Length: 440
Image (cartoon, rainbow, N blue to C red; front, side):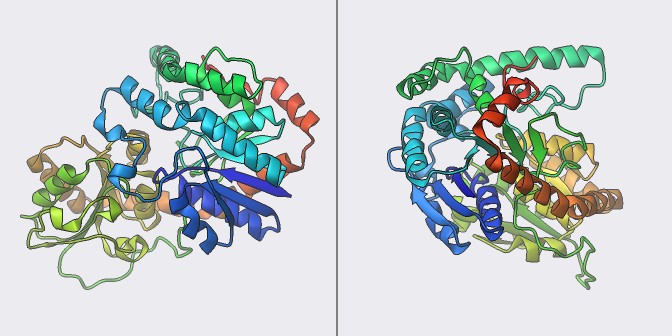
């Protein structure tokens, strides 16, 4: 069968698509990945056929100036949502739709698997009457799952009827924020012969399947409603156990690592380094391509580098301090290392909330003072309960990973093999459609 994957350079969006697409290719299918030019080498390195966006936004680097989101400039939630709509979801929807339709016509896929933010790719797939699945690289980022708090603020699971009602009202409010891009979305739909929609999130109902690239255990352990399925963490994790290696290090080691994409993290990382400077610890800080290591202060107990293999460094650490990006957070848990999380935005508050739910770490504001950060780090290093909880959670994630991934891939294969008429029937039943439309 033929699978067309569409994604874009947005930090953590690309690795899950590469992993899922290459896994399907290894299962004997033809796969074409469409993304930004900067992702071509990575795609070809895992044996994938690659094609770049033609008229849609195209990133050739992972630098601050090349970032279409620039969402780090905004902290008021409605403006953050509008920025993402303008940059990716709805502003360039017609361009993404045009490019996707070109590749659909040329490649003739049995299934289109789109990044969950590329509404334009969904429009093209819907207009071509091809089956559509969505691939979310971690948690579902829309306020449409009725079994969870609305995505974004990092609210806890509701425990009272009042909290349930509050979350219902919040979902409806947050959904309206996306309608800032409704005009752009509907122009793209009309251009592709589709009727206008009354809300932006209603475009999601074109999908018959949503694959979540995270662990169900991490995601509160809840069985999601149809059409969602957990495929386990779609990141390249080693197969080793979470057992901590024996070490003769004279003092604890701490890793400080924030996003590989620019989110104005330099002041936060500098504050973390200052907080750790007086402590009897060894520190390694990785900046990724978004920052020049030379711009950060390096106290005597710290080494600041552009890159280090986290699967080598993390097992030797006793604590990780990070922003809460899905991959950056799951790797320490994978090795039984607790996390001090300072969410910078995006999915970070939601990942942090799940971290705290499992008692495998602590979440604090990115504006937390140096003195408070020092106290939190010192307290976590002195309390073995955090490492024990991280190890327990990591072992469960590892134990379930292969089965979850196989189930996610099999679900994509079943959908690709299903007739168009059967898919339309399933969507019309409401069980597949309701959680992706305006949720109560």
